[in-house]
Amino acid sequence: RGLDNPWVKAYFSGLEIDPNEAAIIFTLMDTDHNGRVSIDEFIDGTMKLKGSAKSVDMLLLMFDHVRFISKFNMLCSYLEDEMRSIKSVLLPGQWMESKIFDNSEGGVRKTMSVIPPTPPAGAKPM
Image (cartoon, rainbow, N blue to C red; front, side, top):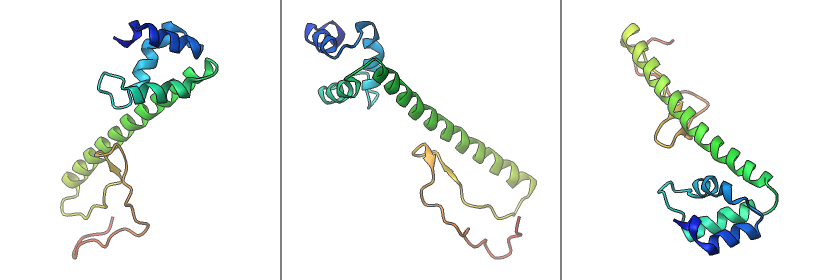
C-alpha cells in the first residue's frame, strides 16, 4: 500500500500532514471510489490539503456532504416513488405530475419546467 512508501511519508511530512490521518486522507482522495489512489488523485488531493490541519477537516466535510446529498436524493426518489404507488392505488386513473427527484444521478431532475405538462384528456385535476 502507498502509505508504507517512504516517498509518500516524506510528501505528507512536507505538507505538515499527520501520518495517522493518512488512511482517512487516502479514502478522501479516492474520488472514483475504486479502492486505489491514482497519481492524479494523490496530487490533487494533497494540494487541497496544503496548509493547516483545518484543510483536512474541510476535505472531510466536503466528502461527507457529497455522500449525504447523494443518499438524501436517493431517499427522496424512493419516497416519491412509494407515494406515487400509494396514490395510484387510492386514486386510480388520476393524472400524476412528472417526478421531481431523479435517482439516476442522485439529484433533483434538471429538466423541471415551471408550467406542469398538460394532463391527458379526461384526467381529473388534483
